[in-house]
Length: 225
Image 1 (spheres, rainbow, N blue to C red):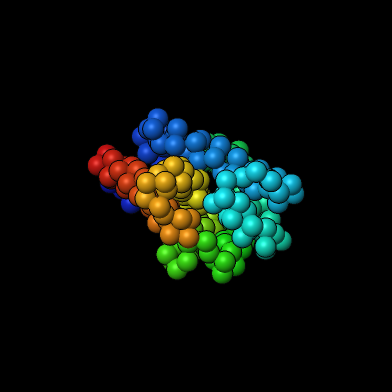
Image 2 (cartoon, rainbow, N blue to C red):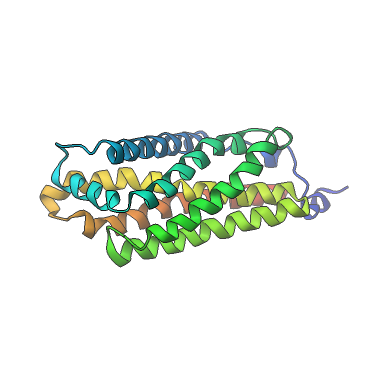
């Protein structure tokens, strides 16, 4: 079979299975660590509300505590999704059957509860628009991965699953962006209600562009063989 025929058939070559560059792998694990830390911190804040938090952080804690059940229904499945994700990303397809099976229902729960959480945005319509856009992209990618899984196309399933996972991890990328806004708030006088939406758009966009550029670069290398 000629290289072009291999590319058209969707079969993976060793070169197409190259690992992402180091910077992307570091970014992936950093997002995993941040996401886990954020969920743990939020659970602790709901269980044991801090008494000496900075005013802006205390106000955020109060907003999320006002709908604690929904918050937990969103962040606990999200934590499970994040913990399972590395097994999907870095294990060989033959050894990833159980995490792949588990990650689909977890993703659906996370996506649906994210829509519900968007009813209470800290950053108003700017934040809500970011959640609606990127959450829809996440669920669409997850759905495409599931369809390819049913069709037995493991290569396309993996590509769309990587999109879904990295888009979801955009919530972790928003945290350093928010930290920058918090740190500069004495100078800018911006409050969370003013900058949260922009932080969401920036964080999710970084992840979405990163995974899309890498996947498209892999596709170009593959076709060129």
